Image (cartoon, rainbow, N blue to C red; front, side, top):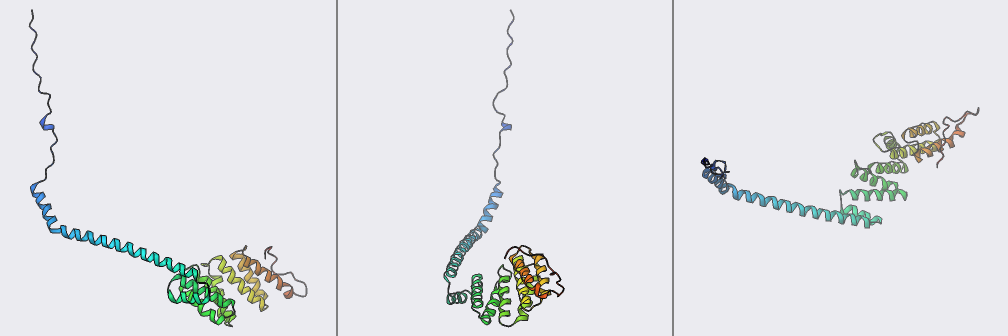
Length: 242
């Protein structure tokens, strides 16, 4: 009878110590070095953090105060309706954009009341303070018309020509300036100039009411300027609007 072979004992199934992860250790020298850096610069770091926090809180507080102040200025402007109130607002907030808008309102009121001499400096100040903004051209238009009303026709017409010929201006501003020039030319009986301005307005904005009004001016002058032979007017286009 055969004797069963004895099995060879298997190696231990436990984990190989060589494969066990080794926890990282900090070198005593490195730990001492970091501790020294903190001892040397830690206080300065905390002070810097404190200063940054104070700066942030101060800026946030300043922005809040400025926002509240701006809201107060807007409310004050909205409540200023009478001329004396607008003047007081302008005096109280020099350099503010709403003060320039209030100055423009004062100029409009003076012009509408026939006080052109008073409107001219008001329009000038408003245009200077609104320089580069959308209302600058509006103030310049008012200034030109006030100058014409005050007898400074040459200066007023020169400013109107400047606005009408400036391609950087909006079509609305250019068209209004061109029509005002056409109206002045029509009053003086200068038919050729009216026709030239009407054609310029056609190039600026053919659908503008100012263009249509300019052609109406040209049409009203054409019969008086027609030759005895009954020559046809130089411009046949007639707008349908007012």
